[in-house]
Length: 430
Image (cartoon, rainbow, N blue to C red):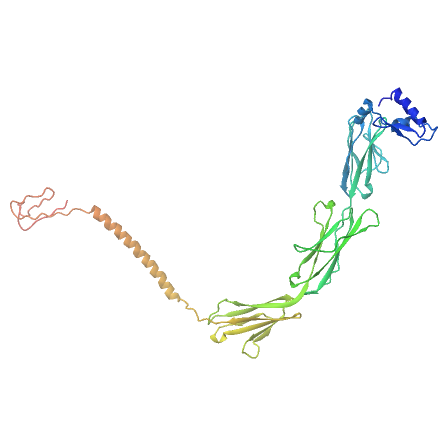
């Protein structure tokens, strides 16, 4: 920037000696200064603090560097870019929040191998910082040493990655209709993360996330709890606590707790085969369900004393069904959580006719013979049709007198000397 003209210098000198002080504003108006009477500010300070509405000042705006704020995840890499339109034969410089120079042009100033030069030109200075830590957060300054020195700030925000959440409070062997409370906690997030709960694909509404600052004063520990009543359908279900944070960029970070629910048994009876007939073998399966699984099965038939069977095997076997086996059967499945009785009504149907092997064989032979006869009949029809169209013409001429003349197509020659007539004749077919 060129030196100010004489007139502005005279005005500045007068301002510094005026009572209370005055300064020329950007709009060309005088503004009051906090200067004591008789105090003369230094010329350099006055020049650097005064904004001149002149062509030189407008041109100097091209020498103002610019940067951008950056956000980086802890452990990642951030690139700081500083650009300027008019460098005025001066170099750009980056310094950290502690005002330590990192790079002056292409020259490294701070011995930190994490900081590397990306690009250095008269119009740009870009550097990278790898393996960023929370302590690297703050305002970084880009400077260009023109007259006056111009600077630009870049705020670097470091995100703390939340740790995998931990679930506590689970008590094993919950009973059906019990109420349980689970707690979830995650540390190390910056800013504070949010916790959510779900059971399988179903969302659980837990308490609002609680936030506590960590001892390092930079990160936070978040916690939440959820309370719900369990049913038998919850047996084997996964209760999931997930942490949501911008540093994860949509990645899942969660912990699950599988719960076990004890409940009374249930049972149903399944016949095999489904439609039993007299003379068949039948199995009645008592299919028990529960936690724990039923360990004892008692079979009974209504109107029959004592019980048919008490066993750990859930099947009742009928080797050969009779009509007398018809009736209502009950199966009682028992575990240490209780008992359940299922019923099945057995109706023994009449035996179904079973075709003999000989009759089956005869049916197959009969089918083959019928097919052959059908083929022969078709063949005879075609053959007869052929003969009708191509058969020879049979002509017979019988002499009845001397007036009979031989046909043009048939010659009847007398056997006695070629005379026509007589009893003996020879017949020719043409």
